[in-house]
Each structure stands twice: as structure tokens, then as C-alpha cells.
Image (cartoon, rainbow, N blue to C red; front, top):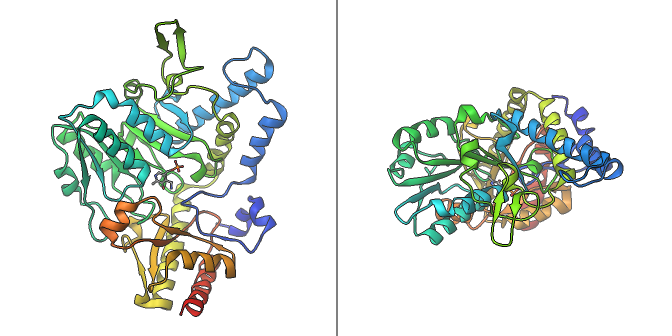
Length: 408
Ligand code: PMP
């Protein structure tokens, strides 16, 4: 990959060529065509969708629906009717959790794992509190992977939901989703399997038909797209199971004083005016990632991960502890670490202040994972994308040496 050329796609690097951005797990940077598409909407055909009878509204609706098609193609969905636009992964997962409220009984259980982001943990925990269903948190192994047998041990004839992340935003672990789903289906074909693909979509090819998941959620802002756009994929009949979290304009068929009938999915789950510019620009983001091969993206990130892990080991030895799988074939995107007993927030602040390096520090919205499994209050996290290069890691090492000098 020609990183110098790739960086030219991003105005943020053109404006500040000293920036080292190592926080793509939080949000990826936005290439110029995506920003241009947002501006194009506001500057040339600004109108609401699905309601106007005039040309700009027709154009806005067409652009909006083309994005739905593009997302469907990107994840190999059966049809664009299986794609619901939300505001993000969090909104998608909450839409599913709320939508299933009346399908869950006291006798059911809901299974998730100890490596989940709060967005794929709290909605299920709250659903179990509301319904009386048992909430089961499957443990993970010391090396940050899932033991499939132990996970399956939590699935029984009463398991209604399994909610699982594809890639951990803290450990970087890539879970063998297809294999897990196949085994879960054998044990209980009625379990609804929900996949949080927020950290997977920009690194791995995601094919919902091959995975055979019932629902899948992700955010466009982690995929070179705008903030405020989320995707909720569901098999058509599984989307139909969901009661709408929001009711109001555009999702109705008929309203009287006493009752309302809803439109078919996906419109049933898209009440109100959506993020038209964001959805429209999402198509550009997908075109952008499609200008790379996933094989190429993966090779690049593996190279960076290996270089980063080797450099950490060479420069700091046991003073720097990395969490998650040692084998880079089992991980993607994120490398979380602790460095001596320095607080991750201090590390991040010094790296920013001295070197213009952006990393994440804290619990990365995964408190149970940090406190119950890793046994630390917080970690520092670096994460990579197509615009990162080995030079960024060299600067990170230099920055961590500064941290050592300042914090002693
Ligand atoms: N799940 C995972 C694995 C994530 O990394 C994130 C974002 N950090 C989310 C869910 C939530 O995404 P959003 O904030 O875009 O809703």
C-alpha cells in the first residue's frame, strides 16, 4: 500500500502532516470524497426524503436508497429491505433489544460474553432485568479468546438471544463467528444470534449470508463514513419480529385516533427524518473501502500489529504489557496495553502534548472486561487503519520514551 498517497485522501493530514492518528477503533478518519458528498447534499439538492413531490426531494430519496443498496451489497445481504439506517451501532443494538421486549419471557435466557462493548452488553442486561430472563455472561480465556465449548455451555433450550462481538475493541480478538453460529444453531436453532460488527467491518470481509447471523450492527463512522449513521442488518423475517423503538412520521401506513398500522420493514424501523446527508455519503465510504482489497487491508494491518508488538517488546520488555491474543492471526485493529504503573490517561496526554499522537485511554466502554477479566482500571489503546505506517509506530515508541522520562 502506498501510504503517502493514501494520506492525500484526507484533508486532516494535508492540514497537519505531523498528526499520528492511532485511534481508528474510536472513529476512522474521513476521506475527502465522503466529506464532499455530505456538502453536495446540502449545497445542491437539500430536501427531505420520501415525502416531497419535487425534483430535489426525488433526488435525495434516490441517493438515500442507493446507499441502502450499497450497504446491502457490501455485507452480502439478500436484499436492501434487510438494511435499516439508525444513528450508530448503539442505536442498532438498542433497536433490536427493545424490539424483542415482548418476545422474551421469564423462562428464557440471554447470553453474551465478558469481552463486549457496553453497547452490546447493557441493552441485553437491561432487557433481562425488564423481562426477568436470566442474563448469562460467558467467560473468556486468559489469552483474550473465546472458548467455544464454554460459550456453548451457556446455550440451552431456553436461550433466546446470543449477542456477540465479531472483533473486540479492547483485545482485538477476532471471534470465529461462523463456526460459533453453526454450533449454536445445532444446539438451539431458535436462538437469535446478534453480531456486533462495529470493529470488524473496516478490517474483515463480512458476509452475513455465510455467517448466517440473524442480526448484525455497525457504525459508518468506523468505516470511513460520517458519524450519526448506523446499520442494522436483519434477515427479513427477523426484522419483522421487531417492534419499533420509535414511532412517528414516515413509518406509518394509517393513523386514526385509536390505532396505527405500520409500514413494512425497513421503513417500519426508520421513524422521522433520517441523517440524509450521512446516509448518502455512506455510499462514498463503501466505495472508498472497496477501492482496497480486504486481503490487502488485512496484510497491512498484520504487518503494523507485528511491528508494534515487536517494537514494544524490544524497547520496553516486560515493562509494557499487551492484552489479547499473542497470535496476530487471531487479532485485528486494536492493541491495548499498560506501561509500568503509569496511568493510561497520563500516557495519552503526554503523547498528544509532546508528539501530536492520538491514542485512546480508559476502559474503552468495556468496564466488565477491564475490572473482572483483565484486573486493571484502564488501558492505553492504539489502533490502525489504511493510513497508518511503521513510521507512526516509531514515533509512538519515541513518545513512550518521553513518557518514561516525564513520569519516571
Ligand atoms: N461495539 C463496539 C465493538 C465498538 O467498538 C463500538 C464503538 N467504540 C460500539 C459498539 C459502539 O459504536 P457507536 O458508538 O458508533 O454506537
